[in-house]
Amino acid sequence: MRLSIKELSWQKFINSTVVRWWIVGLFFMGLNIPLLWIFVDLLFLPLWLATILASEIGTLFRFLVNDRWVFGHPRPTWQRLWQYHVAIASSFVIWWSATNLFADVLNIHYIIASILATCCSVGWSMFTNFVWIWRKKQTPPDSSELSEKR
Image 1 (cartoon, rainbow, N blue to C red):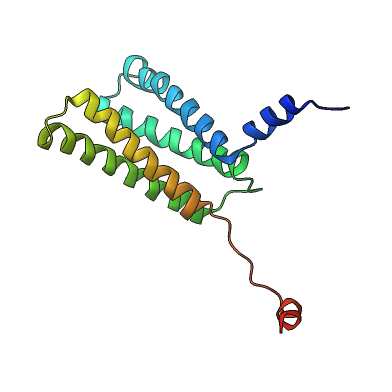
Image 2: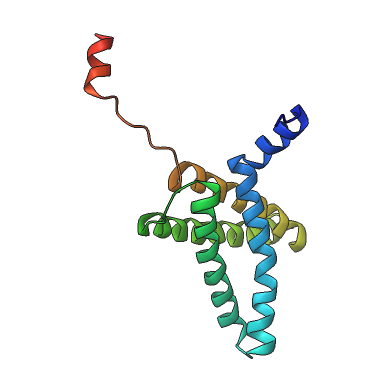
């Protein structure tokens, strides 16, 4: 079966780690709203608890999907899960701090400030995900490669 150049390009695009990361992030952002509705309107939980529960459920499942589908690990590890939680928490701190800085200090409308802060926190999240949690580890050369180079 022959594939056209157009099909190969689309397949390569979808198989891109960054594109998959964005797909997962957007999917779980959309999933968070129904979770909040269930917790607040159906289960009558206070908003502070509903946001924590929805966030944690989304974080755990997003980690599993990212770990397997985006970064190709056969099974998750506690270390990557812990690192992912730290990365998510640090992204929230960046978003919250930047929103308030832009709005209160720079007098930018709070909606615009929130959008700008989201760009900052997503940038940080991409950095932590690709450079820290799921970075490609370099394997040291074996002794035969070292002797060949000498």
